Every structure is written in C-alpha cells, then in structure tokens.
Length: 407
Ligand code: MLT
Image (cartoon, rainbow, N blue to C red):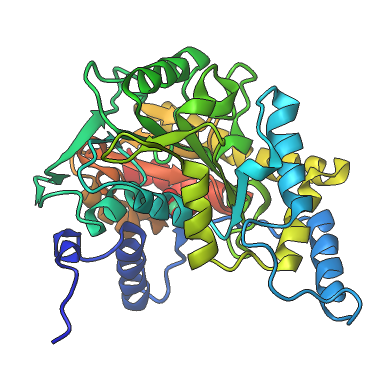
C-alpha cells in the first residue's frame, strides 16, 4: 500500500496564493460584470525590457544553428552568467563573492524551499513572523515541526516582527541553528539597517548558526545606506547563504531565473563534529536534482548587467517603486499604520481586526485583491499587504476604490 508523507497533513489545505486565487476566481464567476484589480501576489506586469528580449532572441538563434547549439549546460549555470553576477552584484559593492560560489536556478522560491534538505531533522529553526510562507511550509513537509496550534507550528521558534520593532526582529538571546531572514521583507516591505544585519551575523557566528538570507527584492532598495547583500557585512562569508532572483528585478516571473550564493567558507557539521562545506553539499544536491536553466534564459539574464540592461532594470523597478509610493501615501492619508513601500515593492497596512475579513470586504466593495496579512503568520493578523506590481492606471483606480472601501 502506498503511504503518504503525513507531514503534509499538518499543512494548511492550500498554499496562501492558491487559496487567494481560488477565492478571487469564485468572486469573478459570481460577478462577471465587475472589473477586478489584482494587487495581491507580487507578479510583475511590465514586459521584458528591450535589451533582455534582444539577448533572449540571440540565445534562441544560437540554439537554432548546429555550430552554436547547446545541449545540457552546467547545472550550476554558464560561466558567463555566474561571472557577471559575481562582478556586478557583489564585487562592485565590496562583497568578496566568486563565480564558483554562485548557483543559477529557476527561482528563489524553489531554492529557499529546497535548501533545508541539506540539514539534520532536529534543527532549532528561527522563523520571522510575519514571513514568506515557503520557509515554514517546506520545513513542515520535511517533518521538522509538530502540528500547528493557533497558527504556529510546534518546534519552530518565531521571531516576532511588529510595529514596535519596525518588523525587523532582533537576534534572540539564545542559540538556534538555522534562521531565515528576508530583506527587503516580503510581506512587510521593511528593510534591515547595516547595524541590524551585523547583529544577526555576529549572533550567527557566535552560535555556529546559519542565516538563509532572501534578498529577492534587493533591486528595490533606494536608501544607499541599506546593504543589498548580507555579504556586505563583516563575517557573513562564514555564516550565510543568499538567495537572489531575476523575477522582480527584471520581469522574469514567467521566464524563470534566480541564483543562490554559497561562500566556500560556510561550514556545517555532522554528528561526529566533522565540518563540511555547504557549497559542496548543495552542489551535490543541485547536480542530482536539477538540470540547469535554459541557455536563452541565461543569456537574457546576463544582459541585465550591460550598461543598457542596468538602465532598463532601473526604469522597471522605478516604475513599481513609484506605484509603491502612491499606495503608501494614500494609505497614510487615510490615517492607517503603514510600513514598507520605500525600499521594497510591498506596502503593509494595518486595516481591520481580521485580515481575511478585510480581504473579503475589499474584494466585495472595491473589487481589489490584496493579500491578508495573517497568511504570513500570526503577527500579520489585522494587516493586509498591497503589492506595487501592476500598471499605473490600475493602481490609481484601485487606490480610489480602496479609499471608499476603507474609509
Ligand atoms: C509574493 O507575492 O509573495 C511573491 O510573488 C511570491 C513569490 O515570489 O513566490
């Protein structure tokens, strides 16, 4: 008899964004005359930029000629892309990351979800609350938690983010083995200062802990004092792994390309106390379970590091950040507590008592889709997340409708 992994029984029936899209579909079916505006899931709406499209075409043309055709590529990514990433995203900012420490993949969701496979079952795990649900769910699937009680899994340590700490939890005064951090944050849009991140790095070094740092939204940081990478901090090469994505940076949500950075100095230990390089373990996993990102996609991704490509990425991200400012300003003008939207594409708003109720009210009254804050953890209860990813005219229309609905 085939048996299931019973850890799946501990999960919510469906993934947050799947639940939302089912609700929205049902509403749309019942109200075919209503025009719904989606500021829920963070999915880009602007097309790929000119430089990226031209590079993509070049990659496809190469695949169409016998002399330049490519079969399987290196699982870790082509050297031209890994070298461009290392030079532009890290070395140019003083972070000593080499091309051999970069693993190109098809998404940060997959990488942040899969990375826990490298570790023992009995880890002490620290999870911020609110947080991107993938970190929690994948550890539940792997059997590292008990059941959910009042929205929290037994066995996880929740690091609370709230208005008082600006949604940037501080390191605890006790040890943990693995901590997930995400800055600019999804869902709150909050960013961590250099001092706040340094405190986390120092804490991790002290406890031989590992930080999994999700920096998928780093291209949206506008404050020059905010670090874009954890590797800009002293000591991080010994205790952190970083996840980055082309999805939001360059409009690749449908194209798929991301990367994970594992310094060759990050170690983890076995039961006998022997150390192992995480880079080697991930390399083993990646080359066994992944066959690489397609060549044309990697050519397209590398083009964002050209002078033109950089300019276009700046324009794309500026466009969404202008939306974020409009959302932030409107919500503030309604007298609501607002976080984010200044260095990240999400605006986190305190609205109502129950997030799902507010979600339903907004959908009913304004036909606008937002994300209920409680879907990101118990500390998100009473909040909604508004995404800046949509066309300007839709954002403006949504804000006018929200003003009426939320007043
Ligand atoms: C979100 O809306 O939180 C993101 O789009 C989810 C993701 O990138 O997987």
